[in-house]
Length: 75
Image 1 (cartoon, rainbow, N blue to C red):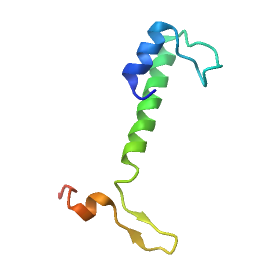
Image 2 (spheres, helix red, strand yellow):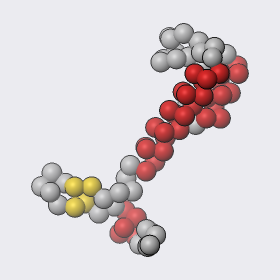
Image 3 (spheres, rainbow, N blue to C red):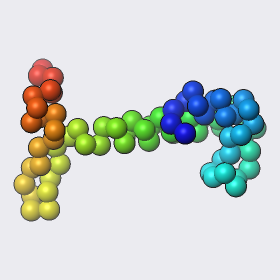
């Protein structure tokens, strides 16, 4: 259920549940918006998680794919 659009479509149909599919149906528009924003945040984090340099277990810097390919924007 990625994104705000799909979340709001589920809310309008009456298929949006809080927590899981067994949880109660969301009846508040404000709660549906909060769920949609949360989903977008998760999706953004998932898509951008491998674009940054990370430290390895030994303390060495692991270079990201975008840095190797030269696709990072220079300031």
